[in-house]
Length: 366
Image (cartoon, rainbow, N blue to C red; front, side):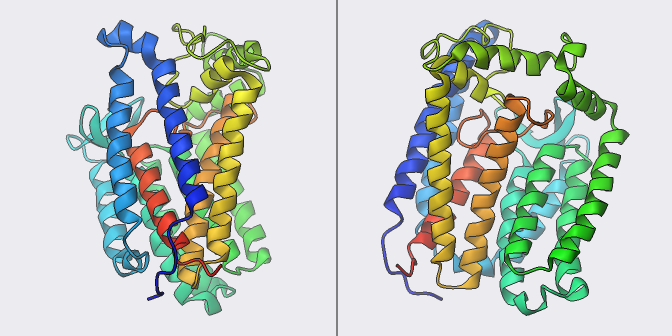
């Protein structure tokens, strides 16, 4: 086990706390009107997000002091536990249905989303597998098939919920980890073609996904149906201009943009804080990406490097997909914006992942 050398990356800590603080402010701003109307409490969503933020921060600082090699030892147990939860959530009476997906276990606001935790569990296990089998990663049979077989088994269980967005982030993250480990590009091209065909099949198998594609191409074709959310998102971003309408002054959160505190919270941020505010948030994510890559490059062993690559890739994937959806660059997928979107499982998971990344930074070779 590597010997701890330094304190955690100070810049990384500041960036995480800045993103979390801005996220809490925006959850309140985006949700206050809807929360007051529905629950007679404008702080309803903000208080719950704050609670999960506190839990997540405690977990982050606790995990930050646990040697990251500990997760290597427990990787199989963690992965099996998450597989069990993914199966359990599909059982009626155990899993709860929200917005058409059976993705939750628990009661009310204190539910967990197993697919969110599977993303981190898969990163932890795959980092172990790749670090131990890097010499075989160029082999399709010995390296690629075992790793991708595990990933796509988890993806299949997630799709039974169904939750295409979370599954896509998990698969994309794992593919980056496998690519970085030295897998052959020719294998990726072949698998990419197969994956593209499978992705098209998944879209064609569900009518609502086809509607999302058509809404992405021309949201005004069905402005009160499948294109409604995209149009309202663009109506929020446009008036924001350079400096925004002012914090708390969004118009679209007045029952135009559905549940603005969740996946489309960046639209409210752009409306209230303008291009400057949106660019500042993207800058913070860019800083997070830079410090994460730096941590991966300077980790003392392959396991630490692959683990850091997986964590920072997960964040980058979610940010790109979420903002891409909000500005209508890609179809609606249901992916949260890290640190910003309302949701206990997503926020807690992200802060736990940051705790692992901060611990790896303590072993930096610089």
